[in-house]
Length: 167
Image (cartoon, rainbow, N blue to C red; front, side, top):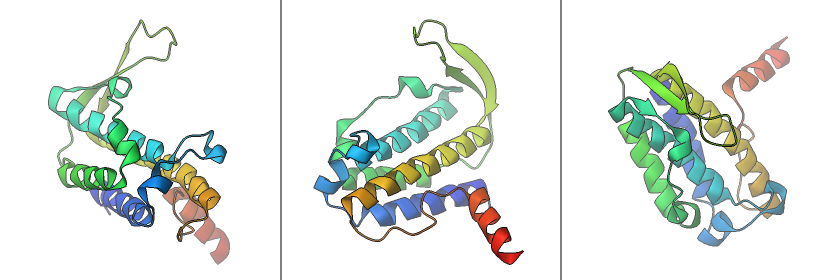
């Protein structure tokens, strides 16, 4: 399985799960998520992948300068359409990139790191799985729909669990 297929599979899981929610459930504040909503977590996923796609074009990726669009976190179907669009537009050719980031809370000095597109897709994929784990907690708090056991679980964890069962 290649990286693009891995992203497609994870997005598919996320979209299937989101389709079980109403816009109200998608956008409501959930105490166990520090009063964030499922929609806010999905918006974050969409925006980091969007930042990467933009960075592919310019050669510079900066996740911190992403726009935070309220519609993505409040209207579930907008988010689903964007996930599908991002998935369809993933590049298949690797490319060297510069990652601009800032680990200083003052936000003054940017750090520039060499990276590449595939490395950033892998990072975004793992970051998405992390957010899906949080979404799973939110879904269980709302007590809506069916959430697969492997939703929000890293492939390495799934493999480790399988090895433990087989040993």
